Image: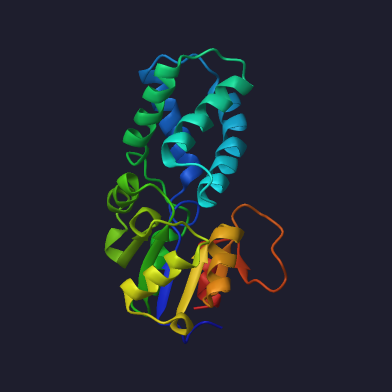
Length: 228
């Protein structure tokens, strides 16, 4: 279906890099470092939806990075009725960013599908993640060499689904919209953001969400072979 494309743009977190698994391992490490007495599973259960909600506000330019990093932790501890100092929340926030890219689990099939696609297409990354960790994730997980360009929201000053980040990515890649395909997990940021800019998009639906019938999706990365 998309064999005529020349440029493939991938999201990173939740698409190639297994954010949930790596994040859980990071919290275990920083809780141990800082002697935080909280049940990890209980914390993650409340943290995950809080984090998603704050990332939506961040994408919509309603909060800044510092506020996101602090508030998501404070709200999670508050939800568990765990008293924790402001100083320690800031320490945990910094430690989380420091240690996150030391864990680098990829989704099943990531390397195999990149090996399959690399000879056929020019590959790129478009990410909303923090610039100080995204390149570390790519390098330490051993997949940086697959990608010709990496567009980060902090380079552009806006985040997906803002059209400016897609324009920047195309300009950096020397690509046109009709030559390009966006592949990502987030329906709003990756898929609708790309489609609204005129770039075809394919959803990696690892969340098992209800995807509109007019949007192509795969549940496993290796299923991309059916489209590319």
